[in-house]
Amino acid sequence: MSAVPPVLLVDGRSGTGKTTLASSVASALTDSTVIHMDDLYPGWEGLEEGARLLVEWIVRPFAERRAGEWRRWDWERSARAEVHLVPSDRPLIVEGCGSSSRASRVLADTVLWLDAPMVQRTDRLIGRGDGVDWLAGWTLQEDAFIERERPDLDAGLRIEATGAADQVSALVLDALAHDSRGRWNPWLRE
Image (cartoon, rainbow, N blue to C red; front, side):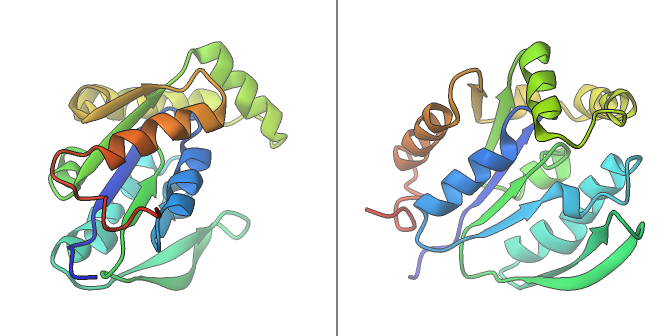
């Protein structure tokens, strides 16, 4: 394919369904790379650092048509782990809070903000089964990031993720397929 691979940033608060959506979009593409912000944050106090590393390690090199390289955060060891390469010849999907900073948005083709009511988000987080003792501190970081970076206002697509995951995915895939510049069309499966 000769088309320049597009970049999709999927941002939103915890529990809005970003990871599920990113997986659905990746499945609809012929080939893609998915990066989870959870793999970049250096622990529960690391939203800002993760957002910075995303630009430095991944999005800027990708925009320059060169491979990015990043090191996964090992949550059990509280340390950086193995290195991963990000090929520059296929679409890039980045999901997680902090993915859409001012610095990353200017290097992306499509920015999506997912939203859902707090009760629904909390229910989803509890349903994951890994506890929510981290949620209060993390929410403060989300609040500060959103207030400063405004990913909710600057997103090209804003979706209320209140329906079933397949309905939300269908809305997003339809929006990508009807992108006015055709950035996603060469990459979407027929």
